Picture 1 (tube, protein in one colour):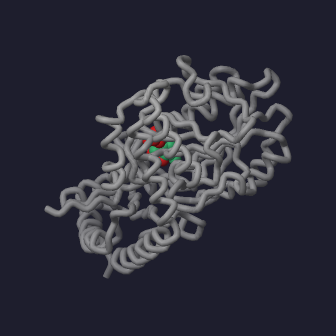
Picture 2 (picture 1 turned 90 degrees about the vertical axis):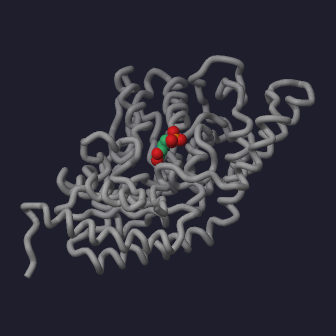
Picture 3 (picture 1 turned 30 degrees about the horizontal axis):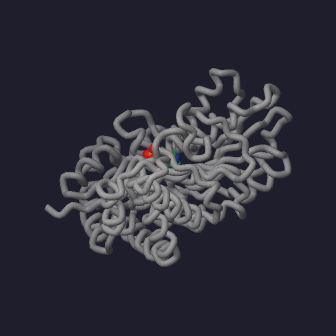
Length: 388
Ligand code: PLP
């Protein structure tokens, strides 16, 4: 059976060029980048190059990139690092309702330590209104954290506008850019962020590697104690091979950004039009919002997302019903709830996400199978109105 992978927001295949670039760093260039000798210097030079490549993808300076284990750690370091350096009278944090669990869970923990957390609602397309952020500000506000692009529905947030509000209010501003990096142009200066999270495995790099952009002069209390690596911002011997891979993935993402963005958006539009023509009563979530070119979230009435996912999987097609981190639980997605969907509507949703390896034939396979699957699932539903 041919296998078709349409779940690139969960993770992506590592590019061949990335694997090739990583391999020497497991064997001949295996040194510890903190060592002074030849082997250490080889590793350090590789880190420097990768730092420049990752910085280049988001318009940052090399010294502003902190390598760490991935998006989850980047989100944790941003929030906990700012919270840990806060004055006692600055204990208010503003986040959006559609953040990843790495942000929402960290906020729950900070709330248990006495921080006051405001969750900003979103509209029916998943957009934060910057005026709501402005209205939530108070004298105690320390930090605003709003994701750049949503992992489930792809909505892109008005980060530059929120950045202006944060600057005027003299409040730190973090954005989770894990899904935006490498998919849309990112310029951290234009966005006005002090902190920006990234993850290698979402851009065809290896898993377990990521980075936090930390703008110069942003106070950040380290969350790990140890050898003071990464200019005292993240202790722990650097994963040199992984970071080299992340760097190459970032370089390729930057070089192909515009072209890939247009290709994937066209592929997505074609898929959505074909599904709409073949399946009655479907809704494309966040369709009219600015959204990621690679992400489509489709809501199908009277067909369960889990049923569609399993039926597609049996045909060799991999998609997701929500964010990868929350699938497996039967809670409706907090993102779909936040955009006003009922639990039943939420359970009928599918996330289809493309990557650099996605082809026209992959989309054709989905468009051929999904309508048949939906028709069968609906025929089993006692509630689906039979059409004449
Ligand atoms: N933030 C967002 C928006 C994500 O989509 C993800 C992963 O799905 C993460 C953070 C966590 O990243 P990682 O898997 O690298 O820990």
